[in-house]
Length: 185
Image (tube, rainbow, N blue to C red):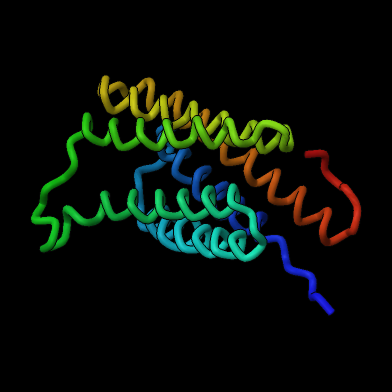
């Protein structure tokens, strides 16, 4: 008798979505980066997504494995880039804004190809990846141009991106919990 496996996608989507909303509330200019965003990035955006990715591996879902593990590692590396310069190992060497632009651009390239992988999947999933691709592009341009205005625009766009991931997570979770589609996705 085969036991049913749980769907790890709502966990990964919530880790991504909530952390993305909180960071982009900062990017939109409402609050400074704080320990709350760093903790969410490490634990929910980072570790929880990596766990979801590993569980997707067990289900044989290469797309889910790659997405959740990669974006979990994005959050872990982003937090490391912010805190390492303040440690003895970092020796106070912060990554220059223009180089951070290239970091964000490379994540945008990855996300573009992941977005292509959503074709034929749910429209909400397609929107999550399309809006994330746009977000990475805007953040890269912000850093290259040193433009606070583009950063604010990216912040609002990122809030929408994160909320769409939260919506998809809850749609999938409620469908599984109730045994029928509650929210369209």
